[in-house]
Structure formats: C-alpha cells, structure tokens
Length: 214
Image (cartoon, rainbow, N blue to C red; front, side):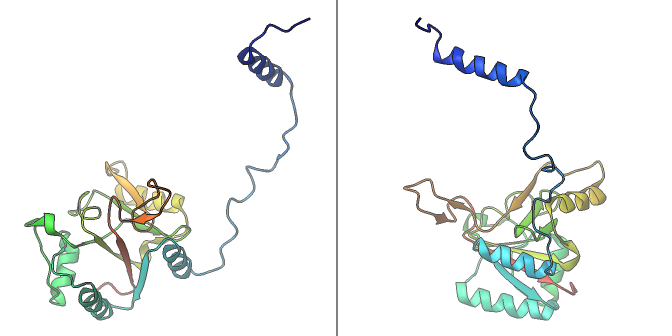
C-alpha cells in the first residue's frame, strides 16, 4: 500500500518517536569535562601567542620609558601624525613623556591612531575587552586605522568568565551599556572568500602590556 504522508509529516513522526524513547546519554560526563586543556603557561605568554595568531601585535614594556621608546619607533615606522587620546589617565601618562597627541576630536575624520585603555586582556584567545565607560567612548577604538591599547598586568585574566567577574567587581550594578571584545584587527572574507584585514575597523592592533604604569 502506498504511503501518502508527506516528507514533512514523516520527519515530524520520527521526531515524536525519538522524544518518547528514553535513551542513555552517549556522553554522560560532557558537562563536567574541561572545555580547554589546562593552561601551564604564564598568562602574558599565552596572551602574546594568541594575539599574534590573529594578526595582532603584542609589546611588553617594563615601564613608561620603555613604552615611550616603542611608541617613537612605531610613529616613525608608520609616519603617524594624527594620534588621538581622550582618556585623562592616559593623557597624563603621555604628557609626562611629552608624547604629542590630540586631546579633542578636532579633525577626527583624519585620525590615524587611537590610543585607549581597556577593561581586561583575555589570555585564552588573545582578546581585548573594551567598554564605553571611559572618555574614549565607542569611536576611538573603531574609527582610526591603527588602534593602540595600553593595559596593566593586573588586567590580564585567563578566560572570558574571569573578565566578566572583574567587570562585576568594578561596576557592580552599573555595568556599561556597551561591552565588546576585540580579537585582532577587523577582518572579513565575504568577497570571494579572500581574507581582508581592516575592512570595517582598524587595520592594525597594538597591545602594550606595561608592568609599571607610571
């Protein structure tokens, strides 16, 4: 006898049958098993490896003088002239070493570099967590072709859950309205499956990890 049921009805019938049959889970310990292998490296090393793997640039500095010297080398290499920094803590830090930058958004459409702080550095995947809580807002980490992040070693954590715990400890119930993670320069492969960096954001990401932020 010919079966007159449609393909859709046959699929639904199989689903109902499967739901009624109780089966033992083939992976009973899945939820208890670790998602990642246990990390044995120092967080600085792990973060540097993961950031470099996604085309980011990691620079460790012992102090402000070390940072200043590296910044001068980068500025000379890329011929930077329009460098912007809006966060008071960073402005004070840059002024101490007489590093030139724009403190306002004058001629921001010509910005070449944006220097910002961050919330945390996530070592597991080389990501930078940022928010709109500071004076840099949403624009400074997105619009310029080069994004420079300055972070302290105390901001380095292993996983995303650790990063969110730091946010909770810092802000309590006043969580910023925008929280995002940056994993390397912006990228897309939408056009002919060719990977293009900087398609909708910075072409270069530099993360300065400073041991002594003074």
